[in-house]
Amino acid sequence: MQVSVKITYNEIINAIKKMPLNELEKLKSAIIKREIYFKKFKKDKIQNIINDFSKEGYSNKFLTDMEEGLGKSSVYNESKKTKK
Image (cartoon, rainbow, N blue to C red; front, top):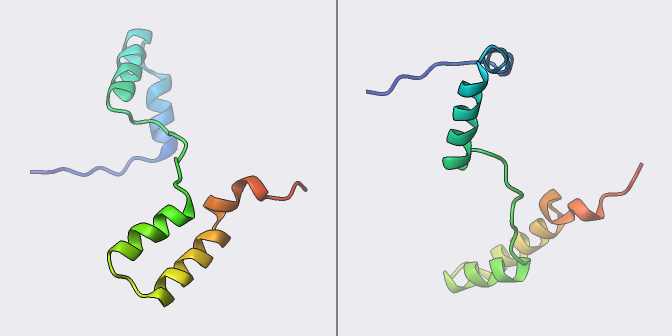
């Protein structure tokens, strides 16, 4: 059986604030052990992605569209963002 409970961000933060230090250390260790933290997305080169899809038999039109879309995507253009 699986039980699901909706908890808001603020409820989580408030619960953490009330935890004693030793419980916070246990929580921190559990998060690290389970790798429940944000890692920077490691992106592959667009050409490698296109090659992988090509090997699976996708059409040239699809591959071209995907390559153009990835080239315009925020993931592949995050370092090109203009400073305001």
